[in-house]
Image (cartoon, rainbow, N blue to C red; front, side, top):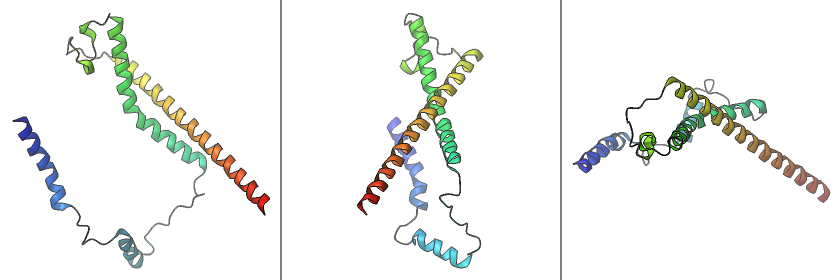
Length: 161
């Protein structure tokens, strides 16, 4: 019965894609559509960004924020799991305190207190910050290596002239 319901659900969810999906043979390429727009509305299309339009620090800040916010959900999950494992170990691996992800044989209705929620939130923010800082450091190291390689290549090219 479950398999039948699952198959029916998959078919119902994929039906709109089959009915309304784009036909690759009949549709024109996106470049042709862009050219049509340029011909009809040349003043309304935005001009592309210059590589030097934004300072490097804004791009680095943007990447930091994206990594920080993007890693937060995983940080919450792993922080909560870590705290649950700690509680489980602290209580001599009693089945009452086993994490739900491991089958949680204890009190299933046990809710987190406000204090536990604050701990998980603060710890997850700290973990996300560490991930973002680590990414920033890795990117800086890569950027410095590229700059050194470019200087070395430039020196080599000047010597060959």
